[in-house]
Length: 241
Ligand code: MN
Image (cartoon, rainbow, N blue to C red; front, side, top):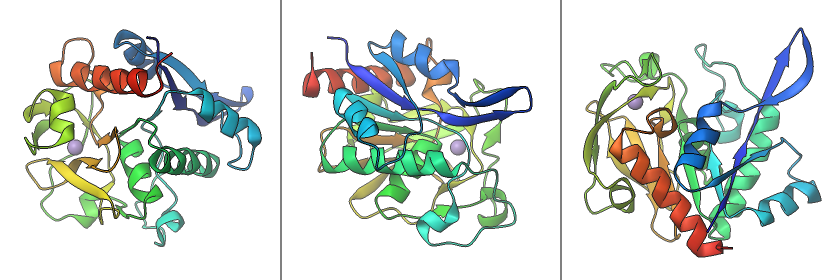
């Protein structure tokens, strides 16, 4: 069983190179180390038959971290603290997320990926935790592998089962967070300040999201390894080859 796990790229722009695509190596390595086959997805138009064909060939979708989603995608106007955006990535990822949610393909959202799943299903975001949530913890905490704050997970949730844990410390590299949870999703994990750190769908075989970065914590962080392995297992069993 070698499930093909698609990871959308971000737009890469620099003065020295023609326009490119980028994915942090940590995602590909973490998928490989936990039983999956990482496949990088270029930012083709949602209308492209090639994007749909690629999606159809994949066993699971991993939506990774990255730039902020455009607030227009959830009906908001840009906040002064909005970070950089990547409109082509928004378009590709929102299409992949909606297909996977509608068609029961295993999907895991990480950081921006959680936010993308929420927006794809009709939810909204805090555009900047520090300026919109009084008293919030610091959620943008380097280095990337540092355990920044505690996470409490509903022990009865599918996310807790996938993590193999309902209480652990994790890293935190975000300045945005889920605000209004999308219809169909249930918040199931929280930081001590109440910021949503995980969500899931109960009407789907595997649609989970976390706000922390498990790909930066493997190997060695048991809940991260368990989550990524559970995702690969779900992809292998549902669409196993
Ligand atoms: Mn956090």
